[in-house]
Length: 118
Image (cartoon, rainbow, N blue to C red; front, side, top):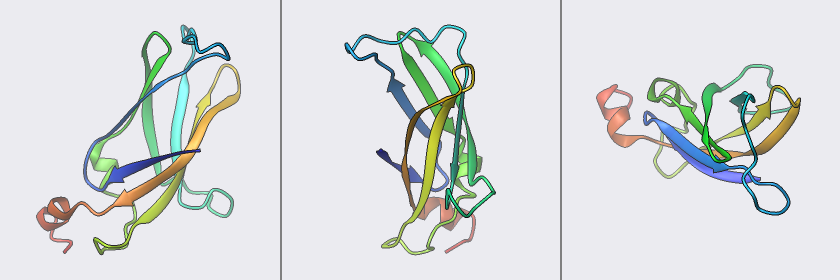
């Protein structure tokens, strides 16, 4: 499980290199991927975010969440506290989860000041 930090109000970008068992990049030609997250993967039916994903060559997949979406993510409203979102990436054509992880949502102090959320 991969842990990432998501800063509230910032664009989130993650680039993954998908490799086979020999460490060689996987050919992603013709494949599409879904990238999404939930606060509680078992109890919650609502998505916390829907990100975008695109293949960028040589086994690489770029996943992004626009700033407009990270700004909507739940946060504890205190810098010393964080909230968690659980995410995964699904390959549509292979009907297979590629990777999953935890996102730690960090308060965007300047973002919250600009939006009058402090």
